Length: 59
Length: 248
Image 1 (cartoon, each protein chain N blue to C red):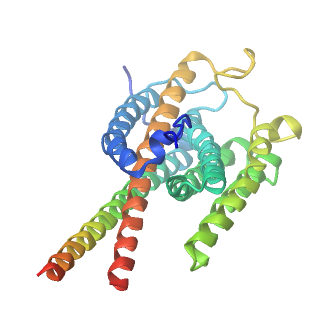
Image 2 (cartoon, each protein chain N blue to C red):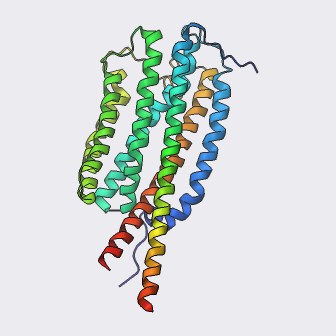
Image 3 (cartoon, each protein chain N blue to C red):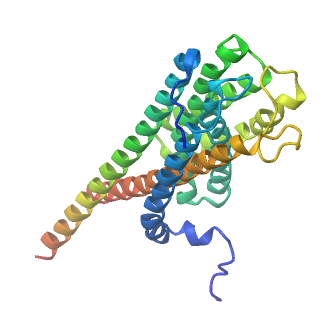
């Protein structure tokens, strides 16, 4: 197997295309995971608050 | 009264609890598959011989074509989810539609940008207002319009309905994107994928890396779509709890 990373005179087009694709994928992954983490934490916090409130009311 | 007839094929995932249980293992599984396929696809991308006409720019095909296919495919998912949300009022279908839009917009930006970077050395120009390029730009505008509509209205239900109608209108653009190179004269080449006529089809040495990269992009979308739907389910749960707390 021979890797060919030398794009010659086309390197100025080839490498930005790969770099941009990598950057967009990093954004998609980071944004999706951050949003899931944030809303999961928020839902769990609200759930814990709601439980605490119902325990206060039962006292 | 008899039990509810559960024959709707969407019923399995329409239940948020069942969806959360399913997506909990399915999202990382699709992510892992995408990672493995991307590594194999990139190894193939940088080991195939350069094309006798296009030289090393042929390697851009393996990131441009999957992005372009996903741009249309994700919009089809957006259209189907919007239809289900409008007709059956499934909250999960609406979340699925909402989760599609940013990913689809990102794939469309990638298709346009990598196409432009490929077009400059091959066509001598970054951009031409021909049918394929313009219809893909219109696709991006539909994605951006969908996102803008969802963010513009305070009433989430109204925003969801208006955005779903816009998404369904935009489905008309999908056959235009697909067949634009056949219906009009275009600088853009016709289809040369596995489904093209045999004389136009890619040789196996290029078809394999492209197939692997297409599957990698598709798996990555599957994984990220599930993650984003999960985020929206938690968001709705958090908002419902906040509303309940405010009423108490």
